[in-house]
Length: 373
Ligand code: ATP
View 1: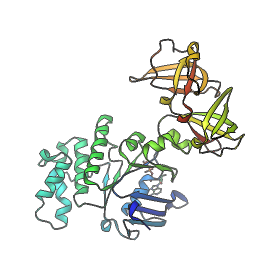
View 2: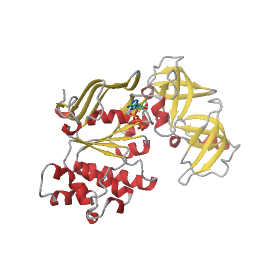
View 3: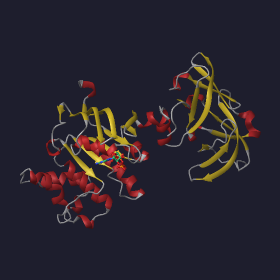
View 4: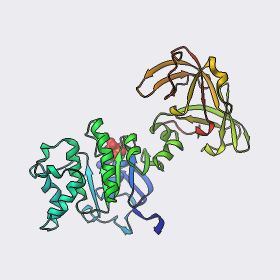
């Protein structure tokens, strides 16, 4: 059932795909809210394209159902589904100009006067001036925008995008990420976007499903996934995480006290997705930009209430907006801690003794029993 407050455009129920004895997609349930930009994110081979193809009707599920809006489309062939797909390869017709490429879907439906609709669509993707060019006369990014315009011209209920920016260089890719997001916001159609690039998913999507080995590991808004990863896979896949092995030493009110090497760390129990039993082994996660780095000589100036561990700088690298430090710390055996965005202190060179410190609330905590992917 879909209620009025959370209308969905795509609803997958127990959908799976097996090839012989190999399971590419384990039974999964997924709901894509109407009008949202939704990303399926994961490494190569995790089953994201197979999932997308089952929505499109290009792949027959081994079990489960696909609903588009209220309609069960599981048994419908692709051309009868209210979806369209944009592929990485653009798949434009090379002999047709841009106008005719975009008009194609309308002409196939027998429409004669297409000028207004095609013009509007070309304006939407900012290619109004290029209408009479052939695809080979356009850049990769422009060709991809033609592919999007062509896929949107018949107003599908859902637009599926399979690594659409994969063939573009990094700079163009970033431009196109913003461009696709703008187009989606303007047309208000649900986009389901497959990518292996976490930055791309985070930049564009309202919601991201992180896939791993044929399963959805976690689903959420980008900031929520980043700040509250529930598994080590998600913590490592989305940005850099420092994961410190620790043991739950005590519970006091809403806070936990953890022991990591020779350090004691505080943590609000609510930030812990692992069982919070005393003696339990956990992994404490801190994002690099949440950690401040102070030379050991200045440690007395660190504010009360911050978690702190000691260490020694082993390497530094200047990366423009910030400097990245690698730290060895007794809190983890040879732990490499990445710290970014600290003010430059000329003393923080390899060999320097330092204190790493952070606000306990800026920590997440995972069950150490999970496999580290
Ligand atoms: P990529 O980004 O590399 O396309 P993906 O996450 O989209 O990866 P899928 O294409 O969905 O992954 O494939 C998931 C798994 O299913 C892979 O291990 C792949 O080899 C396997 N697979 C896909 N299609 C078939 C097929 N027709 N026959 C057998 N195995 C297949």
